[in-house]
Length: 213
Image 1 (cartoon, rainbow, N blue to C red):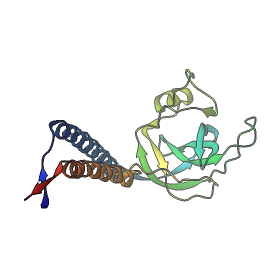
Image 2: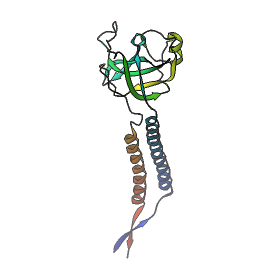
Image 3: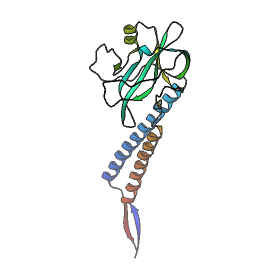
Image 4: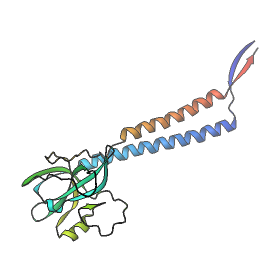
């Protein structure tokens, strides 16, 4: 007596597969959107490249605390660049903190007229802090309006994240805004693969051996 297979899905298996597929596809779509958002953000910031020439004002340098690079604690250094009648705050780079916090690291600042190239940023990431009306050399975050009021400097309404090289000993390995695109695309593919696997399992488990005679 020969035997064959018949496709006999159960209602509960069909319902479970439908729910699983919908969830996996939704998660895959979300990851795909995240990848596209980061790709678009990177393209938008590429349009905001700025090149300025001026003179740094090291007496107004600020150290943004608790900045980690390669598991090492340090500071991001911000120094105003004097232009014609106004200034722009330049996020110059990162420097490692000393063994103690009693003394700030020495930062070399180029003298005279310099050309600085980079990306214009509307603001820096805000850090949750108990500081109010923060002042001094070391801060958790920096607001353009507050800094202008404290120093009396006329500031342009953006930060310049420096990408051009300089002999100052600072690291400028800024994270790209589109970092993680490949990761999101990989996750998206994984979720879509899970949806396909759920369908395949549903089909295989719904096959029933039947006798043919």
